[in-house]
Image 1 (cartoon, rainbow, N blue to C red):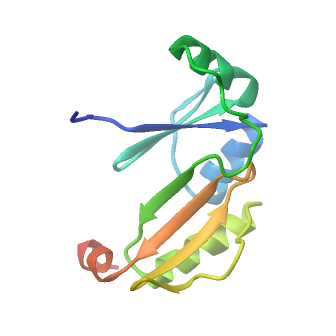
Image 2: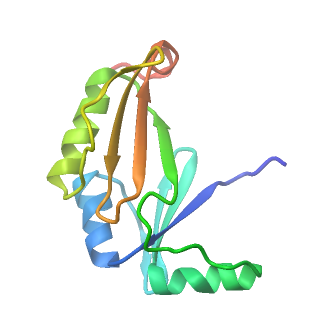
Image 3: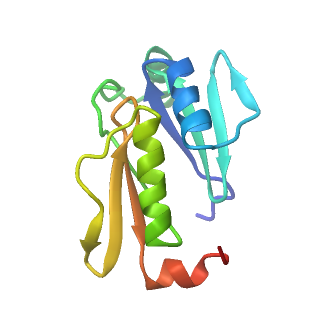
Length: 139
């Protein structure tokens, strides 16, 4: 399999609140906002926010029982980040936008890692190490 696009669909309780968190708080841009959801196009990923009640229509269409879309942390979204400073900056921005940082960023397994949850409890992992730092554009 060689997907051209990867989309992560996250069930959310309130599309407006989630739009403010991701667009205004984290600075992600979108031009796809409608009643079905919000699409954020990131460099190697598309993030689609969909209301929890609408989420079941997607799993029904696929013929599988929907997971409990209200359970926080049902998935982890991991991102390679270019520097420790950027990890810390994103964590601060997430908190300022209404998210939470369950524990301070720190060194784990040779990387600098930080975690935050969005306003619906989805867990994000930010990783900076020698490999991601060397691939980062100059600041």
